[in-house]
Image 1 (cartoon, helix red, strand yellow):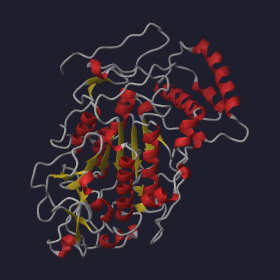
Image 2: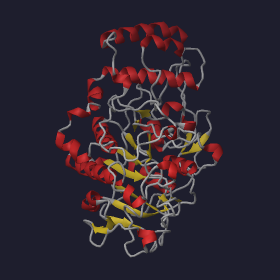
Image 3: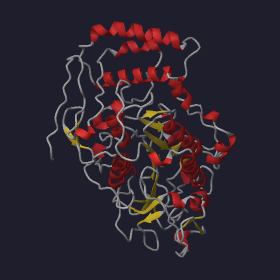
Image 4: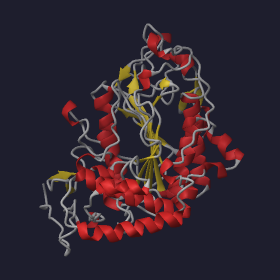
Length: 494
């Protein structure tokens, strides 16, 4: 285990550290939180519905790697690789369908015809076609991808997200929580499962979800339209940033000051993790409310019509644009969350079972809320980030839990396929303009070394200067490795 983890100490016995690290260069931000009776928060009218995030009292600590920010493009459900980044135009029709391959800006590299915009910026990414692991199960595979940790069914809700480690190590910046999910409402199921968690790091390191709690967490509870419109002007402004007509900011600040005076006599109360989490939600929400630059970051209507159109006026387009705005404003780790949707159902999980009301996969991918929308949004994000000078310091990673079966099933869909898939990296120290790995003639398995979600997580940590082999203390003061398995993928980082 290497150097023995130590426990930090602080002089005031009314405060207590939750985490300590064995490696000095990764010392955490010491988010010391006062323990109070959170029942009194109701008088403030905020905080109760917020997702938790790191303490606003934590001082900034800069990343030592090239990637100062992360955009994690989380497409939950299993994006089809053969109909996007790894086409096999010479394969039989039961494999390739009727979709053709197109040339890209990388000589000799082809994408499927569904990806014309990404084809234009192929030289700006490092595409990995040998994404592979051993599970075809959504739940296990999604947790593996979100955490970098291979789990059993007993561990689905215990392991911290990758973004939670960024919250733990680096804390908030410019008044924004370190880990933000846009919108953070995807719930695989049924029944619906929330995998956006701080796990054993503590629930205060779960993402701040712009969507709060989903109105319909079980996306299977309603039937989507046969062909729902892709155009969607989604409001991604957190409800916590909306002051009611009866509560202006000055009045809110006075109440906060009064509350602090009252609470000083209660600092010695020993309360549990839920109380600490609620305290963090409250203080973070108050800080966000009080900072004009934070509130400004969510005003997506300030963007020009040309930019909005470039990303696409779709859910995925708006979410990618919001991610850029949040990184520009100071958020360290932003997850773009798009997969299970009350309007579209299983966006990527295209078995074409009768209950899904999907067309055949070769038609589904052309819809504006499917690959056609993803292609437009991802390419616009890359161009926009580069034009604004943000790409060099921001690692952008496209991930999904697995690919889909090479053979089209009897219903015209594709099923789960953990053996092969495609992901990509760009920005933040990535050596772009390359394809890493390859699959066989049917895109069924890698012909080169396969890389797992643990390897992707290790690559993200490496890009940010985080030692993935370090040990940290969990909320019960037990030593845990940042990452149990996985190595940075050779050749991805320059």
